[in-house]
Image 1 (cartoon, helix red, strand yellow):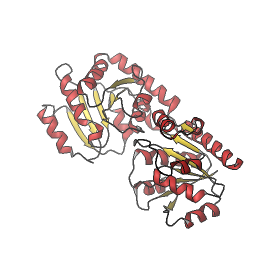
Image 2 (tube, rainbow, N blue to C red):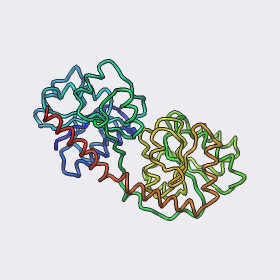
Image 3 (tube, rainbow, N blue to C red):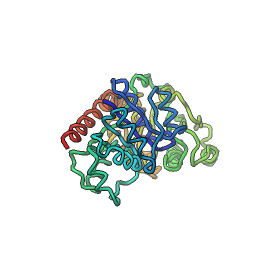
Image 4 (cartoon, rainbow, N blue to C red):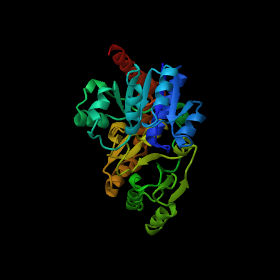
Amino acid sequence: MKILQLIDVPWDSGLAHYALVLAEGLKKNGHQVFVSAVPGGKPWMKARRLGLRTVPLATLKGLNPLRHFLKEHKIDLVNAHTGSTHSLAVASALGQGVAVVRTRADARGVQKRVGSWFLYKHTQRVITAAEYIRQAYVKALQIAPKKIVTVYQGVSLPDFEGTPLPEETVLGIVARLDPVKGHRYLLEALHLLKDIYPKVRLRIIGQEENIKQRELRGMAERLRMENRVSFEGFQTQVPRVMAGCSIGVIASTGSEAVSRAAVEWMAAGRPVVATRVGCLPEIVKDGETGFLADPKDAPSLARALAVMLHDPTRTAAMGKAARQRAEKLFGIPRFVEETLSVYKDALAEIRRS
């Protein structure tokens, strides 16, 4: 199959990660894959590092080169990963017998807009990265449920080989420093637990974005926990980082349409304490592979953490269950296989029309 992936975000977001992991997996599966992205942007550069063929992103005003590309390379299917590229995909594929798939892996609400009926009339399938997004599509756009399929993202499980828990209890949060990631509530939760569990440490991994590291350091100092919290910045060896932690924490206050961190913690064999936002209630099985807490609620986070800290044996068992769940639901072969099934249905539909 010849497939063109359209990604117009300039940063390496969860959406872009979803698209590029998929593209690489499809290529390894023997398909011919092109990635159309913003030249010089992070997805463009990452696609090139992965050995994927890149194509400069077109615009609706300059559509002819893209239509010519589809025809010249005999593209079977275009997969659009954002709203703007969805319009581009439909406009370029019209009349060419090329199937269009819209993938939704971002947290913005699904809304009916002017022209939505036309776009989805000419879109053979929709892939959503979580079931809550799929349900929002059915409710907001009244698309036939059979045309919308949830496909959870995949991670490279061999990269996260299970390792024994560290001797000391270490909490870890891997997330950009941004208010939506809820670092302040995690620090407050740790403060609530500091007298009961004085030896527990917290590692904060992630690059500065909308919060400076010094702001969080200042908060840790005001809470008198500066000796129990380490700020480690951006790290490239995420599996190694996670192997050095006992429990993964996702304290987000919103977003999390695609929670790469949740899946990676589970692949690493670590239980997860996560907030009830986005896809997290679908990823983390409450009471089995971790615990769910309320967002923006430090006491709720503290209670969930306390259950694990009080019973290390149960925590270790949850970590094993998390790894088993990751192997069953979140491996890349499964990710590619389920996506290809949707692609085949989309192609069958366009060929019948």
